[in-house]
Amino acid sequence: MATSRLLMKRASNKRGTTISLPKNLITNIVARVASHSLADLVNLKRCCKDFLDAAEDDFAYKHVSLLHKFPLFPWRPLNDKKLSFLKRCKESQNMDTLFREGLLEYLRGEKISGLRILKIVALKGHKEAKYVYGMIMLSSEDEELRKEGLEHMRFLRESKCVIRCRGKVEKLVQYAWKKNILLHNKKTLCHNKSICKGWRPREGRWLLLDDEDDNNDNINMCEYCRWDQELELFNIH
Image 1 (cartoon, helix red, strand yellow):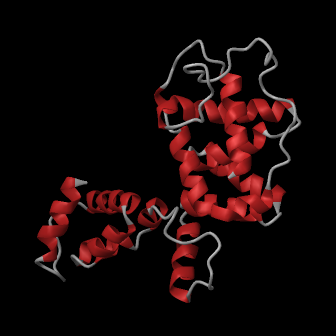
Image 2: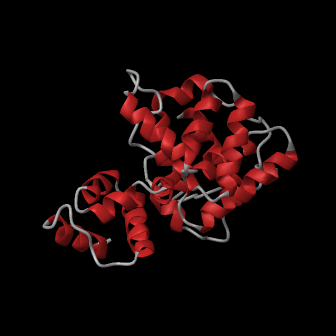
């Protein structure tokens, strides 16, 4: 990002001009900026014609980071400019846009189509989609679907980002999730609750999961209890 910011500064002094870099490198720079900050992308487009042209490429729209740039349930309708921007992102296969679409459909009650989209995005590696889809699968009565959910959650666990993903999803859905509580499978993932040491016992008491959890690899802790606890948190937020 430091290199792209330096280029932005240099180019900003020569607006309307071009820069001496290969086109594919310029496109990659713009895509990288877009994946970190929509505001920086807007500023980059003002720097010079080459950046402006590259910013209009589908590759740039595909990588724009916009998970929280637009409310999932806006208080007022989005204007035509914002709607056009989101449409272009969707057409460019932007994963944030597709995740938002799948989540929105699911929350609105269109669960089959919503899950279909969430699964597609999750399989492409989108972490927040993996979190939501994985949790929904773990809530299922179908044992095979629960196993599928475990695969997604283990991926996030290995990537040490479970807590971060939960926080991003909570921020995105806010109050809406409470109106769409999952039909939580009453059967816990851990089948040995009576003798199991559980998840994160410390000083004789249970603690809620926190940021330490993503870095806690204590092999004596029960993985299934860990996901049972995550399901509780997922269903009350």
